[in-house]
Image (cartoon, one colour):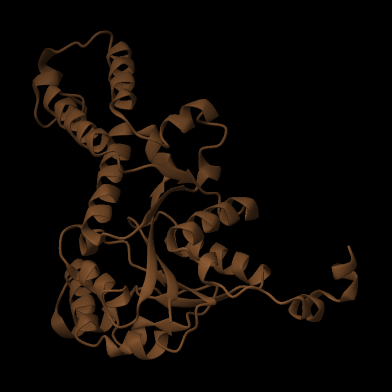
Length: 302
């Protein structure tokens, strides 16, 4: 029996849990079943109480106190401990039917799925390579305010592409918190960031040159301790151009826009997730008697 799920991830502070809350609310309003799994051992406050919480197995606070580790090392330890106790997940997820959408909320330390094989190993256990046989889609969130700093935007896009390559499952990439850039960034300009290419950086370089009056060196520009000098220097620009060219060459990453306060926006994202995991194809067709029972005879007469 197939199961369906989505893995919500991205850097810290991009709104992963907010998106999970909005998605759960949307599913409930549309009478769809969901199972919320918190995989962040440091998370504390929830609008919707998780159906399964990694803190029932291990918490970051306890690990840091007992093992003497910092936050990042503690998170890695927590996930390595989870991989040694995968029955914790299997026992809770195995009974779920295909009607459920399993939502797995991950922490914001991107090295867990871009630098070390912790989350990729977990994904293999959850998907068809493991015993649970979950049709899984990754949702990678990037904050929309990154578009104001294009070097930061391409760094975030590179991390999204790295996760896509490491996890080897369908991905939906999202620009979150769109309400923060409405009115400050023109819609036509925003659309250019949905399919990133090197022209974005070239335009920004031109604008930067114009702002600086065509360059200008002097002692300040030569000072390696001067942040403006380093961030606007030739080496930094060449690095950003190389990153942008790599993303353009792979041509893997495109983004959808998300406003978590907008039901239509959340519903649109959900439709992409459903398509990626082929959710609707596995659902049983509804019988006319089921429609009558749910909506009444009047609905069938319309």
